[in-house]
Image (cartoon, rainbow, N blue to C red; front, side):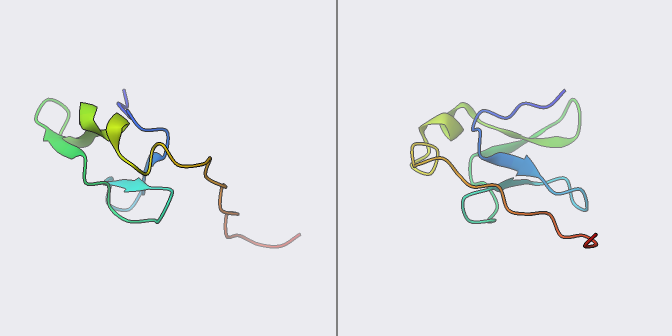
Length: 66
């Protein structure tokens, strides 16, 4: 089960840490959950100034062109 408070939070598969879609930086509103050994967002993630900004555009995924 994944607990993302902010809609801009996502995980990178290689390290499982929480990043922000707004700037691809690490999310600062996280803690290490000892039950599932994963980074989770805190309740303060919902109050993050980035969360209140305009909707984020999804970046195109890199891959092979058809």
